[in-house]
Amino acid sequence: MVSAREKLHSITKTLASGAGVFDPAFEAREIIREYAGDAALIGGGLDDPQTKLIDAAVSRRLNGEPLQYIFGKWEFYGFPFYVGEGVLIPRPETELLVDIAAERLGKNSLLIDLCSGTGCIPISAALKTGAKCYAVELYDAAFSYLTRNIALNRADVTAIQADATDGTLFPGLEFDAVISNPPYLTGTEMKSLMREVAHEPETALYGGEDGLGFYRALIPAWSARLSENGFMAVETGETQGPAVAEIMRESGLEPRIIKDYAGLDRVVTGEK
Ligand code: GLN
View 1 (cartoon, rainbow, N blue to C red):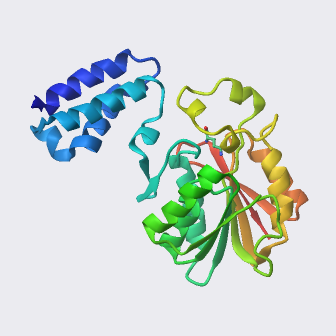
View 2: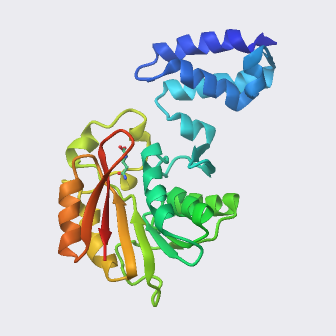
View 3: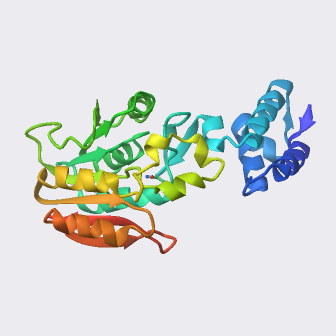
């Protein structure tokens, strides 16, 4: 038996010695909590199997792997999501897209999310609003996370493995909301990824040389699929708002740029 508090101190130090662990005390606490539970942190001890799991997690973390992949699960909008190699980790700022959808949708609404990854957006939107949600994801590994996360959350989401730039998917349906957090990093940004982000799939990050490739493909392809009072909402990088607003305008939608909780441009909506 080792005391959890002692272990907390020692792994905080170890993590602090590793390059680029941003908040060693926070991560050390999360690691102990993950493998030994909250109670351990208020005076408990760790048995051998717990200590082994904790040490293995610390050594993977020192290798630059994101904490979320090591745990295999992460929370978004208060709901649990499986994550791991091959799928983008849900980011807190992406919750803004769910808030925007939740303001406008109800039980009878239809939402489609493009480039879904873990499915954090359509699953949270379905659970929060009761809307019928659809999800499109191209890549095998990400699609398998998407279907597992739908099951985990028992969400009313229909998933399809397909290229989201094909605006003819789910023929005959008109959507009250078309939502996407597509890959949007530029060629230059891809060359200087943080160590953790470099573990995430390039296919979920790279938006073409200027980062705007997916907006140019998705917005015209899906603007025609909106219902009468429908809208699109896409996440963007913090400098991309005006360019994406212009793409919305070219597709006949009335754009608006919305800031995230850090005060940065983060979402562009387009009203029909
Ligand atoms: N926000 C992510 C990052 O900064 C990028 C996600 C995306 O390209 N959609 O790494």
